[in-house]
Image 1 (tube, rainbow, N blue to C red):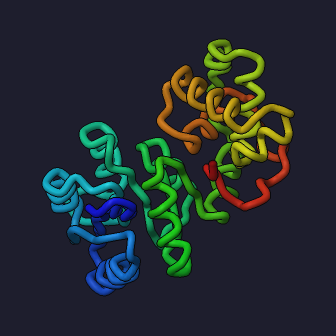
Image 2 (tube, rainbow, N blue to C red; image 1 turned 180 degrees about the vertical axis):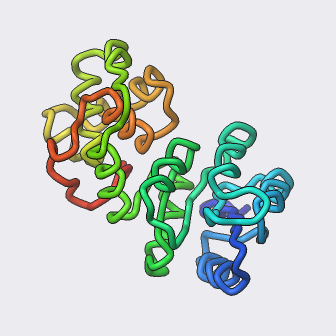
Image 3 (cartoon, rainbow, N blue to C red; image 1 turned 30 degrees about the horizontal axis):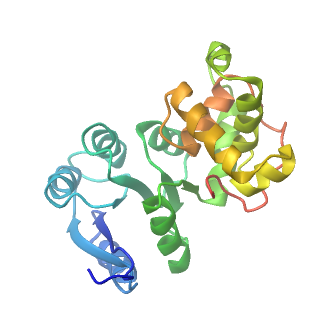
Length: 235
C-alpha cells in the first residue's frame, strides 16, 4: 500500500435473500475505502467465510438458515474478536436487539436504513466504535422499562466515582467530547476513563457498557434525556 493511502476496510455480507445481499454488497463495494471480500447465504457459510477471510466487519442478517445472526455473532465474538459485527435486519423486535447486543454485535441497523447510514455504520464499527439505529436505542430502553431482571449493582463497586459518572454519560449516548464538556474534563481523560471502565465491567464496547448501566440500575428508563445524535457510540 502506498504511503498516505487509507487502509481498506474488508467486509463480509451474509443474508439469505440474494437480492438484498447483492444490494448491500454493491453499496459497500462502491465506496473507495470499503471492499466486500465475500458473501454468504446462511450462518454456517458466513462463519466459514469469516474464518477464511478475517474481515474487519461482518454485516449479518439475523434470520438465516443453519445458524441465525445471533449465533453467528456469538461465534465471531468468541473465535474472531478482530471482526466486528453489524446486524442488519427487518426485525426490530426487542428480543433481537437485546440478543444481538449481548452476543457481541457492535452495530444494529434496520433494513429500511438509507445507503449512507449503512456505509457509515460499517466505517464506525470498523474504527472500533459502536452504533445503534435511533429506533433501536428506543427499543433497548423499552426492553428495560419492561423489567431487566435482577439488577447486578455490585458491578458498579468496581468503578471509581468518576468512572461511574462517565458510564452514566456513555449510557446517554454522549460522545467523548460531549462527556468532557458535561464533566469539565478533557476528551483524552474521558477516553482513558472509558477504556478502564470497559475493562472493569468486562465488556467490549460502549454498547455493552450501556447495557451494563441499565442492568446495574445506574440508569433507569426515562431517567435521562435522549442522546443528541440518537445513537450510541460516537467517539
